[in-house]
Image 1 (cartoon, rainbow, N blue to C red):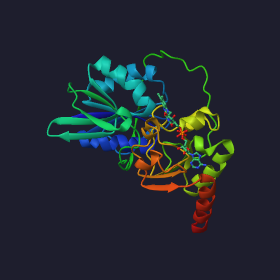
Image 2: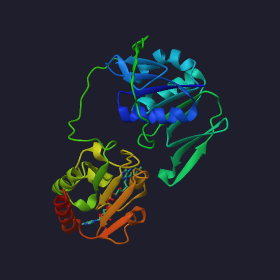
Image 3: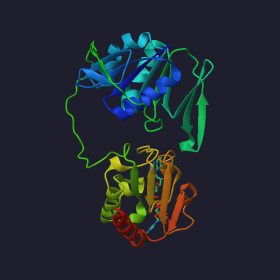
Length: 296
Ligand SMILES: Cc1cc2nc3c(=O)[nH]c(=O)nc-3n(C[C@H](O)[C@H](O)[C@H](O)COP(=O)(O)OP(=O)(O)OC[C@H]3O[C@@H](n4cnc5c(N)ncnc54)[C@H](O)[C@@H]3O)c2cc1C
């Protein structure tokens, strides 16, 4: 049995994919999107490519994918490549998986449903399976050593990249932040988020937001947490002035410790929170920030 991993050049993502491949079989090959000639970790075989557009990669991936039993990827790359690969290979497809178990010869794949309120378990119908993982749900395996890689030959460029616009972003991304201090409508405006940023920096994390705060134009869209925003899994998630709508909670199902600060003791967010503070954030957050600064 063999697994083919397709990944961006990101040690955390590659490590998560390796963890899952290790649960399924012993032989692991890898395709990494990078401009380097080597790939971190010890692999049976490795390929590299600088091509990152899914439509251009699919044709080139057919050869290594043909003799793999499991094709595993994650994030946008996984979502853009695996459906087409599964169709072409006649494989089962499981998207946004949050757990993978192998029991005897059956594999059981878990996917959250109903906005994270329940989980569904699937058993693929075909022997060959394409699995896209939800990021941050698996402990990354270590990537010891280096493997010399071959260049993946891109057969046909179906899509040309005309322009690339990078959104200016300071600090760490929502997906990778160990701590997220999120603000909602209760923050009341742009300035309130400066207070949250100060606290986020102390935790070496970043700020997030509810859709209400994004829709009000207080913070960019890229900071939205939830069903239609980013799904996050930090060690610490602090929800400030956020009521806890199901669509918001869908984005934090895998957050380890949730703290809620809300002046309404009936706010649904308190049901999800391990620690709840019933207070006006304007009084509480500056005091908390000051106390944490003292500990630094
Ligand atoms: C299809 C769909 C998709 C959606 N996707 C998302 C999504 O991805 N993410 C998301 O967040 N939402 C999403 N929503 C919107 C969601 O339903 C809620 O409307 C939204 O999450 C509410 O944001 P909020 O909690 O900031 O605002 P509100 O619900 O208005 O809550 C504000 C909270 O702030 C508290 N508050 C007010 N002042 C203070 C103060 N001074 N101190 C402390 N607390 C205070 C209030 O008590 C209240 O609980 C989606 C909705 C739909 C229909």
